[in-house]
Image (tube, rainbow, N blue to C red; front, side, top):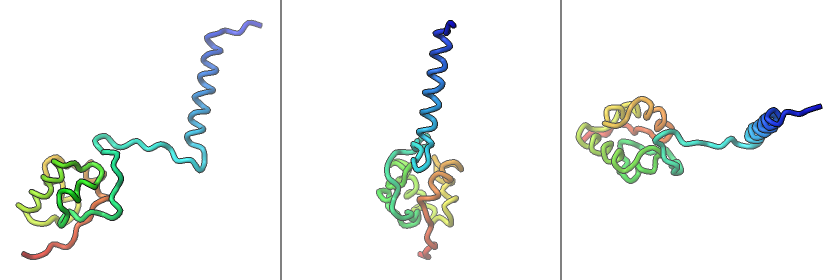
Length: 115
């Protein structure tokens, strides 16, 4: 009986791939998390950040909000008044629907205060 060396290598590679997949998805073991494109690897804030009262530094604690975006959010709020809901952040340059969905778990909006 003759064993084809190429077929043998493919068989071994297939078995190793299957073992790798099975070990990554084994019960009780979390799958590795990959940050969304554009999201940073920083830890999430312990409580939702209020976009109507947060400083630029507070906003930067949210994964996906950097220094420039935090500053644009604060400037928009100062110029246009408080946000009615998190989805209103789409009015800020650089924030789209996908960003809203990614940021929503980390943000909240307090009731607008009259000036």
